[in-house]
Amino acid sequence: MNSIIKQIAWFVAVGCAAAATHWLAVVILVSINNLAPLGANFIGWLVAFCVSFTGHYFLTFRQHATSVARAALRFFGVSALGFAVNELAYAWLLHHTTLPYDLLLALILMAIAVMTFVLGRYWAFRRST
Image (tube, rainbow, N blue to C red):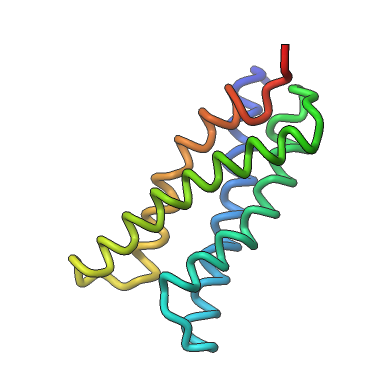
């Protein structure tokens, strides 16, 4: 299998696991703990970051062989940027549409995935030269 195809397949698998973790954490926090969706979204992101980083470091971008510490710092920056875009879009959509919070979050998580792949592949997990 072509290297980039394999990498994209791993990215999708890890990303789906992280997005499902994020989405499920938000739904649980909103429905069981009565937390506001935006606050729950922050907690969901932190939990999903752990799933995402671990999967991408050991599976998706394993051939880049950068140190765990360097990759974690860089990927945290990528993830934080994605979360900032996520939170801004989520807040705006929650106030300007009538779509349910869980559907909005699912749509936003899918949209952020492309940015995360590009920045992960070409910066966060790239070995320093």
